[in-house]
Length: 118
Length: 106
Image (tube, rainbow over all chains, first blue to last red; front, side, top):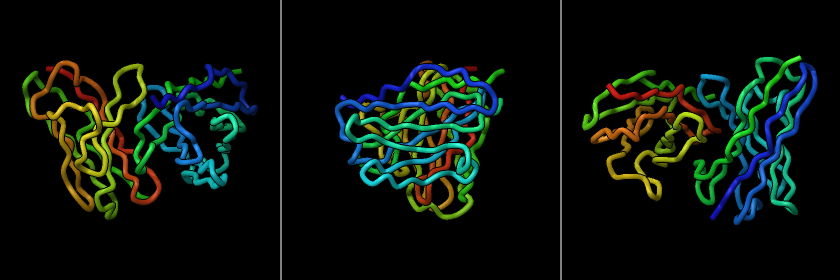
């Protein structure tokens, strides 16, 4: 069964960076896109971007182009997202998501809470 | 970028009611529209992909319809376990979520 296991909650100070991970079991991430989505407290879902782990090609939503950096390590079957220059507005739950076919999000990680506070 | 306008934002209905939720795209997205259900404290769950294809294990009371710019998620007979927030997602050009519809029991 395909599973996405995300790293634990992060507490970051304003102006610093955090790096989140998403380890995939039972599916080779070379064969799919890995996506990242956020959800601010009490708000809706926002698509951040996706990476093609086979070649490192990335696509970002416009508002996240200078905020998020997506990478992937195919040897460990893990996707990463680094969030830089943290602000209080970055406080949110961050999900990774993927599909085994098509472009929808059939599988989701459990989410990582990032709290930005001094 | 494609914008997705979802309505209503909030919906209150009784068990057994037929419920519909709408998403409107700012431009033609063909059939590339999915629906997700998110219960409190959980990750979203895929219900329907490509407008009307029911995902594995999803009850048949859920259905999707529409094309081009206008899409609808229907629940034929609302059950207590359907209380959740529902989101649409377009993947015709990049990916964009709708704003969500919070569904509660009357």
